[in-house]
Image (cartoon, rainbow, N blue to C red; front, side, top):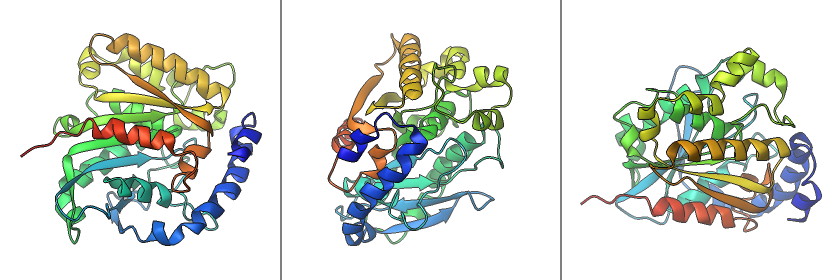
Length: 313
């Protein structure tokens, strides 16, 4: 993790290259293991961005497995369910890592700027979840283990975390038939509050996505949380938030402000957990999965999710 510490005070954009250049060779050493994990691609909507990859647990020979949706970040400007060459194992490593821990793991693309506006990415992820539930027989076809649509978990990092916050806090976005199936949500280093002392998000991305300053204030997750009806808050699933030990300062502040506000609104209803991704900066947590380095936070998340699975006879 030396390169992580070396770049712990760098900007997010400065962290990307060295982090990929350090961890991807380690992933290449595991390429045969990563690529042996069965995966299939499905189209869940109208555009080329409406596609999702499903990774199947290799160590379960029968029965049902919980579903984990992972939503990547990219400041609403970039991101793919699988990085292009020469870093083509990034996010495949995520699918393989959690599939090996018993989850049918889904990584969906969503619309990006400039071809969308708020709240399109949250709508897309909602549609991806609904697609998997509605087409579970197609998802399960040819697999010994079946996706359990009664035990769904959502995890999102950076912009992906904010997309999940939007999905949860916009009233009536998640259909009533889907809400009770969501057992837990993991939001990591989300861009939830956008009036921080240091802004770690390109201003052009914020104006392109949200619009005016008033719209940013109203529709960023902190604003949605403040204005959400009590019914929406009462219906929230269990939530845990995560932050890197060496997180970018603006995102660290945003995490603290949002966590305090979320706990204030859910105090009498449920506990909102928090964990620290030790030894990581903003870019490294998911890039490092399946390297055997810095994976402790992921095992912690695995335990948190497994403790919330409901087993039916």
